[in-house]
Length: 293
Ligand code: GUN
Image (tube, rainbow, N blue to C red):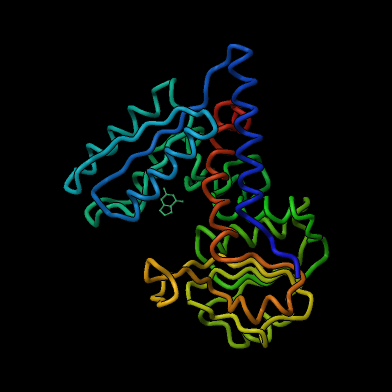
């Protein structure tokens, strides 16, 4: 079994980005700048946004956070998005989700100009990816493609089974794995809550991507000998073996599945560390105007 080490791969990519920022500065160019909008005081969102700011600092990007109280109006948020859209200093903008109930997430996302939508959530970016045009790809699918590329996983002609059909993971993963490009060129099956023979489908996969949101759902009997297993899940469960009193597990039973898999991502330290790096890669692309010219 080969461990796909997301921690190590993400550190390598951060070094590459930091070198690129140094080169930009040496040539008198503009330092990439990521802005984030954070609404309310949700602890998970606070953590995400501060990790993103820290990652920007590590690679030499500028970053700014626009904070709003939970009772901000939709209009005020749309105004803030418009302001950042027009700020030539800012290359990429993310609006941390979830937003409070009274705000229409889609309306806010669609207010971001596609050129700055480094989360890849705007329908223009999703549509462009769907038809194979250059686009920002959202963090998790982009990170998984990068993990596969850098781990030299052969995808061409392989049967890729994806468990989960969400807009931010399963759906884009299915398009990327089936595209006429490498990594890609796989034969893709998407399984979801209404799939009848999910176990059999999973067991027929050469590449199994699990984003089903259920702790340790995938067991060894659902995995083919020699399969590549990518675990997108992350769950905090109580543990009496750790100081903190909890530990992190994925959607895959790592102990038993790792004995059958040829390659597998651990949790933590697999897909997770790649997501912030994907955002940095997209912000670099935005500052270079790589997608939209
Ligand atoms: N909330 C949880 N994950 C994400 C993400 O990738 N982007 C944004 N904007 N919000 C999130």
